[in-house]
Length: 143
Image (cartoon, rainbow, N blue to C red; front, side, top):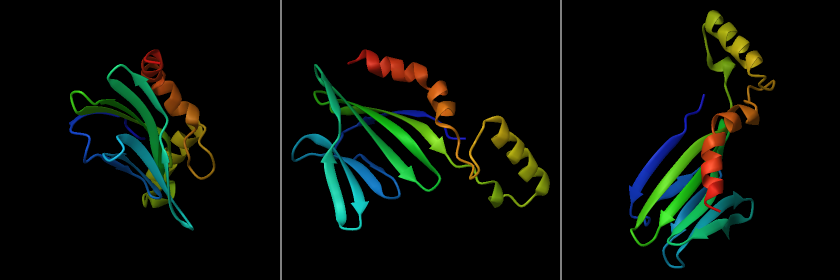
């Protein structure tokens, strides 16, 4: 299972969020959060969706890989040069085939069935969205 984290960081200049095929970073030259995805044709960079609220800017991105996706909400206060980062799992892949003990594999299989994971072990989106619905309501209240 994935875990959510809240992190407070001083100085937005050196923050970067990476996934297997993408990264998000703060471009100090233009003063915006950017999202870059690798493609067959090279990196594709675009602005991230941002909501301005007085001195705070709320941005959203995600980190993806072969074992899961993480949703990342970033609250930037430019006047104070700090960033509050809320990172929460969106989906995770639970790999039963990585276990060697037959008993552990059965426990894992029972758990996957109980949470209604798909055949490859991906957790349902609803699992994490239900866990973090209160944090989403708090962020939506800023809009």
